[in-house]
Length: 216
Length: 261
Image 1 (cartoon, helix red, strand yellow):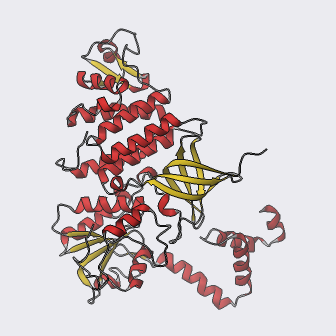
Image 2 (image 1 turned 120 degrees about the horizontal axis):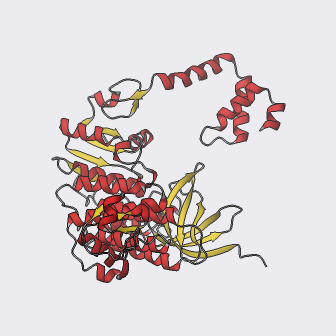
Image 3 (image 1 turned 180 degrees about the vertical axis):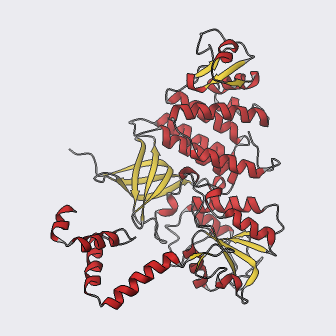
């Protein structure tokens, strides 16, 4: 590090260092990006700088779904084309984007901003479960779909939320789990294969969105 | 001749943490090496062939390659995924507590067969036994003994007087039970006669005998409080999963979860 700073001008070294901290950016990529910025036209760097500042200043959490937004409540929560009786619970904002991309869901979301990880000290109070509870208590929610990750933390979160919602007259479902597209049966773990087998679907009929398959 | 570059072991995955973009470090407990950490490469990618076999609490057969600092998991095959444990929040919370205790207490060790068996059997009991909490209490008692923190339950830890059933106190910081006189004079928690008897029973009886004991809720909570404190003193830190056990229990409300030991 110190060897490099003596060769590199201090501002460039600082920029390299900043890029290096970003996920997926190694030391070489960080250098390449820094030198690109150095040569880029001033408008481009100004646009980048203001975009960086804006994202911290103008983006906050939607008071309803807790997703990141620049308008509160967010466009999705006030949109008229969504089924407001459905809530899909996800761990992170990126998860809601993934579900949106899949294009087979037209309800609302709830972003927990994390998953229960008891051994790391992340308990129910550290994620946005209380906010979900308020929504279910106050609104006309018919179904809560738990789309947390299919790992220990995601499963723990899903069963905890299901338990929290038990007193309410709302259907709680968990997204089906099975083989991802392109996966080999041979390498599937037994939990996945067991669930895939239990929740198998008839080939002829299109799976019904509700009630067709065994849920949970 | 150098040690072989790859080796095979069975292991229980105690926990995982992220490493870089796509890898994870798995904390494993093995019969032959005790607690070790190993890298699982690429398990955060969706099509990882390893990921599903390395979930926390699962017992797997692993092939590891020696690395410079940490060994690398090259193959994994689930032996017991504890699927039922993962789908029941009451059992899962206890399973995580058990895993955290083993993670905190243990270190690399040439022979951990006894402790490994205790861990595997406890996870099986937490997954399927009717009295989950009792299985965890027995585990705590055996783990404390194994690690050299066995509570003294025969004579007063201060004045060495023989103990009678009533009026004693449990002083985790002193390593055991205080007679009524000493309990009155130093910091301790009241120890009911029934909890005292059950603590002794947990300490000397195999689990198949302990499992036959009926323990009602109040007594179960008292035992939990004493043993948690003993664990806390031995570790000199809180067990984070204990808070989760409490949170799950608070939700269960009118005791509608499965058998609370």
